[in-house]
Image (cartoon, rainbow, N blue to C red; front, side, top):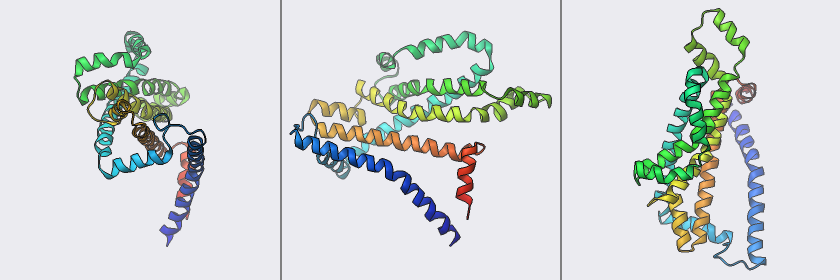
Amino acid sequence: MRKSSKLFPQLWSLLQSALYPLTSLAVLILIWDQAVRLWAIPDYLLPAPAAVFEALYGGFANGSLWPHIGVTLAETFAGYAIGSLLAVLFGALLAESKTFERFVYPLLIGLQATPKVALGPIILVWFGFGAASKVVLVALVCFFPLFVNTINGIRRTDPDLLDACRAFSASRLYLLLHVKFPAAASDVFAGLQIGVSLALIGAVVAEFLSAQSGLGYLIASSSVSMSVATMFSGVILLALIGLIGAQIVRWLQSYLIFWEPGAHRARSRQERP
């Protein structure tokens, strides 16, 4: 009984938070449908919502969408994980080492300023036309937001707290792992949230350049056959994947960074009988 008394308020709160965006989505779909009917917009320009949902249902029913979703998810997740790990490592190293900053930071800024689409053909030449080139481009795209956020978060650590730890002979590694990283956790998760959408963009751009499967390939190939409903279904799936990914990162932030005041209040409300 006690578990159920906790569960139902949480479910009701979740439904309430989802009600507002779902209402906005329903209104947008209604406007979309009425605009297509009122101005008699042809299907090859803007299909009706029913046609897009029919393409989605048909793709899931006959199994044609699943391989494309799986390929894009695998490329996005692998590149996102590699790029995020390297971003945190390089960000921490640069924030801690002035020498490393002098030698490497200008080069990284120059790489950041370079349009990643321009690097796509070079990456294809170096890593081939398989999944490796897609993973590298995804990692490169989502690297820089988290890299910059990690540096800023570490450098904004309270100096009084650092001085207090140094007074007790805390080592540099201890300060980094137990003081600076927890202080930078909010900035790191903000970079992770930005990286989710950028990782999807990188995967789709890579699939546009060269691929035989994936949602980006599905959209590109559908444009050749003028199957606009299928193109819209691919875009909707990408938006849904990005939304779910961002929500997962936000959920991890609220549960892992328990020392934040907002997370503490949310946890207290959930534990209240």
